[in-house]
Image (cartoon, rainbow, N blue to C red; front, top):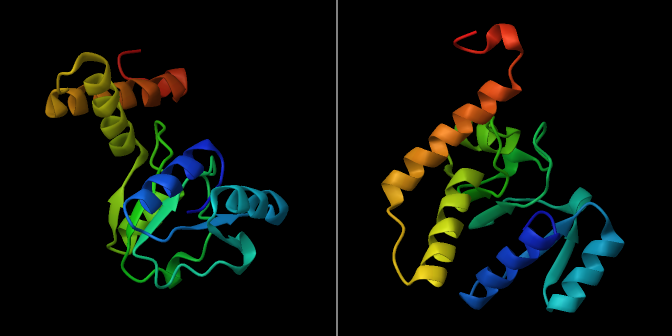
Length: 154
């Protein structure tokens, strides 16, 4: 579990509840250790983290422009990147280039929205329709972020 903010803590606790043995990884060793101790989890500082041997690698930091761990050491885990934005993150790109199974932030958002919808309404969210809406939202975000001369239709 790289990152021990709210998303990282929630994901680590969910994995632990499912029987996994998550290890928190954080660039700030004091904060990481404090969070790990509070949650009863193991901790490794980011600069000492080696991803080899991980079955699931969850990236839960706001870092999008570089991979905060040595991706060449990743064996064959599922890589979950909690970040969703208009562009694919460096973590997602690097994991896909290695042929790893990737769950990106948009997939996480879709799953979360489905759970929230069911919790509030008792009904299931139509997954494929919602995926199409999220895809359209992602494209719209990308188009808004593009310089005006590169925006389609202008």
